Image (cartoon, rainbow, N blue to C red; front, top):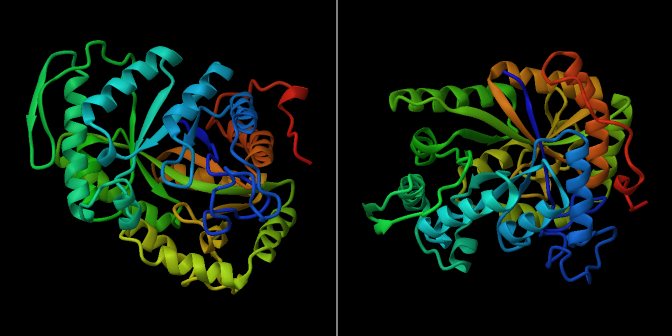
Length: 387
């Protein structure tokens, strides 16, 4: 089993600090933010990241979904015209689009891009945001709907009329006249009791946020057991940030600078907002750093695993911090547990892609976890434009 490396597209904005919707209201989209160092997610900047990720050997890039970022489908199909091999892990919410339409969109996407779509199914854990999109189901019923949604998507990909009648979804003669080729892999995450059976029934890759290895092992064992009961096997992935440098001292100094830029008031506001979530995964992320503490000694929650990102950022809240060898050690540790896909990111995403791609990737290749890097010298047009 080799390691699949993926990067992240910051379609809600990027910068030199732990930027998030709690730091600036429009995600940098309006270019009017007072936050220093914010980079708007315009197509020029995102193209730089996508091209760098492709050149550095990343297999795919993840795009988020939600109020505070650009639409993932439209953005990535535009970026596909500027790349050749890079795949796009497109996040979307089952509750806001018809499953037959989603299946058709995926099929069209595959034809336009030459088969470069992966799907990240996001059931949603923020009730206020779900209602913003017109979705008023509670947490557990959203997962029940996701189960029905994915049954229909896979059903209509069969190329024949498909009928389905469930509690949340009804389809008569659902059809994707030209099924996707290849059928996109489905990435799925969720830590609640309601999420596990849906992952076991439908996911190709179960994706967890970056918890300590012993907690990740518990999740892997849980999903493996549920999948085996259904006669299925599921592969596993993890979502992490990275701060990788030539020395551990440099990496931890970078983490300290990110903390220095955080105002206690911003941390408190972010934690109050995130604390209202229905997401069990988000609750687990919040528990890792002790409820928003700025006690720096408590933020390294496992060797080289730092919870500082989660002080202000929702979702993935931990980072691998250390020398290139340290970070490779931790990736190998997760890999030994059964994690195959690593979806990574860092602030800023353009520069951190180079730090990881030129530093950690050769370490992983030397251990036999990756093919020998075929990345040549960086072209001038792919070097960061922001100084």
